[in-house]
Amino acid sequence: MVAPVFQDDPLWPRAGHWIEPVPDAMTHGDLALIGVPAHETSLSPTDADATPAAVREALMRYSTYSAIRDVDVSALRAYDLGDVTEPDGPEGEQRVRESIAEAAWRFRLLLAIGGDNSITYPVMHGLVGEGLGECGLITVDAHHDLRDGASNGSPVRRLVEAGLPGSHIVQIGIADFANSAAYATRARELGITVVPRAQLRDRPLEEIAARALDTAGHGGRPVFVDLDVDVCDRAAAPGCPASAPGGISADELRQLAYFFGRDERVRGIDITEVDATADTPDGRTVRLAALLVLEAAAGLAARA
View 1 (cartoon, helix red, strand yellow):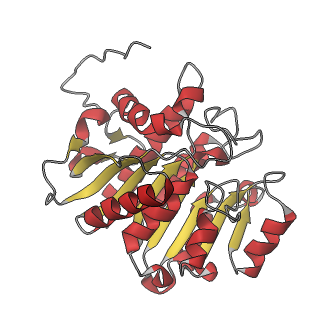
View 2 (tube, rainbow, N blue to C red):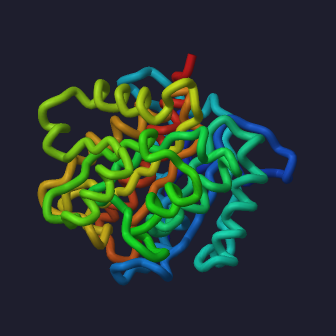
View 3 (cartoon, helix red, strand yellow):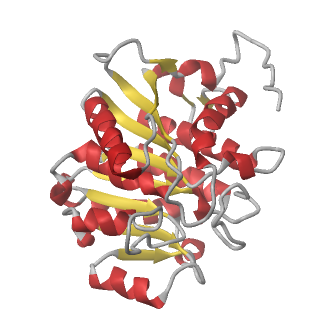
């Protein structure tokens, strides 16, 4: 496919130009973008390793200005840290943890672009180090991700086993016919707070986000957020192998990305499960992932 050519307009700055390559390993800033193209342990066949590059290209389609909030994210110092090389498997996960740990202290918010959902384990682990017991996790996902083994279906279970308290995990968007009774029971036994997809129809999104943050971040603890795009309706996210009809809307996921980006307790966010090679010709799934980057950045820019 031939890469699109975008015209320059000095009065319409492109988001793809705003996030600059990081000059050196000592650069500090507000926001860091890092690609984590893991895909080898996915339960569904995926070429999600192609997605970080596709999201960077999709950012060229958008400006840096949020009209509804009158926020221009170009005021943030944002840098692209590139991709972690070969992030799959034990050695790859170690490279992810080291890369994230090296960057975590230099930026207010770290955005990791997957790759499949397996990245949540090494990215959060790298962000907080040995402090998992004093952190919280929010997943926006159709699935519990509590499976046995090491795959894109197991990061939450692995984090719990590494010390993350189940009582400080909130899962938003859990879908019908996307999980098993055994893993639903496991979530209850671990004390995980589950907000099923149906509740998002009946309660304001901002209220749901606020309660999730208060549970995961109780006592001021830092919070990591996993945005699994397969939580969306398949019409909005056809490039996610496990997305299904009836998921949340693209707009709902965008709002949640903003609400979480806005909260001081949130130190990192990942965006996962998009396979750029399986997307529709209009690139709607990849474009949504790029907009999630911008929504989280707008939230960061709006922090008091």
